[in-house]
Image 1 (cartoon, rainbow, N blue to C red):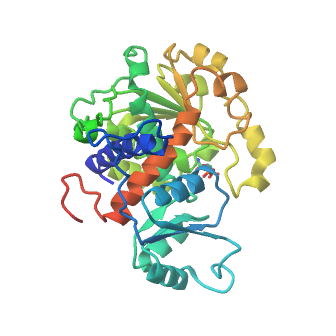
Image 2: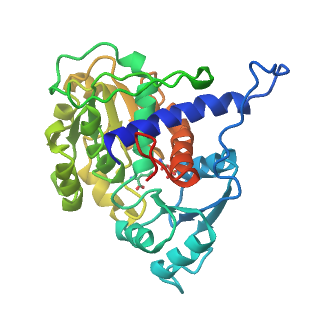
Image 3: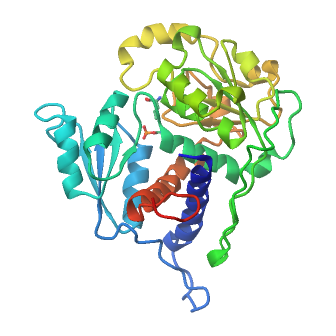
Length: 354
Ligand code: CP
Ligand code: NVA
């Protein structure tokens, strides 16, 4: 997605949230004509979205099932033991068949090539719900959460490297309809990531620098992001906004936000002992961020599920933590993605169909 498209998805997520949440709350008064609550868009009415999940999920599954329901559609969950895929049938044939009976596929796969194969052969939109390389819907929710908490980042930091992003910032146009407020503007942030170079970080690498933020990453050398990720980072010109090293303290220097993810992603369970050893010293703690010189007001984010290895309880459950609003926002960003990609088949920035 281009930056205007990402911004449109973020603005639409914010709009979906504001328009839908009051509609879900108990009605304590009889709505008058003037303030009558309008139902969320029913753009998935009579449409079915296949949720093709070959790995476990809590947030992504809940976000997709609940948002499809709010959009008036039908969510068809197909777990790895439910269908013929991988046992009696190829991804190519499965993609064609599922696409012949549904209007979209939201797929959580192992190897990233599996989703490329699905997208190649499905006659309907295929959206990535997590693969070995990427987790795009997670990072949309993360950026939405940062915008919604923009007021917490009003003190510019002077310690970190602050590149000139003047020309990279894209303003998000206000949307006054239904008295809905526009998504708050966010100043350029220094975002630190400490831990494993996995799918969530990879999407941060191709998003944050383009959105005007600088990214500082600490990960052990042997876990450096794979070449296909760096290729994409360079194609998008994001490499200029990334500092990469091995020292967690160096990475959190000047950080407004500190982010991490599990050290053992789904499918890597056999590497657990080695990984726990390799990531010693990478746990996010108050001490690490103080000693590394993070912005004193730094905030914490994590895609979840979380283990204590990568972040201690003091940070995870403390006042810096945005992890639960971040998890809640999975629903609204997923709703915006489905509404625009499957309901209306339109994610262009200027409103034209594509
Ligand atoms: N963050 C995330 O994708 O969580 P789940 O694996 O529970 O969906
Ligand atoms: N990196 C993690 C993210 C889980 C949402 C994994 O792939 O398991």
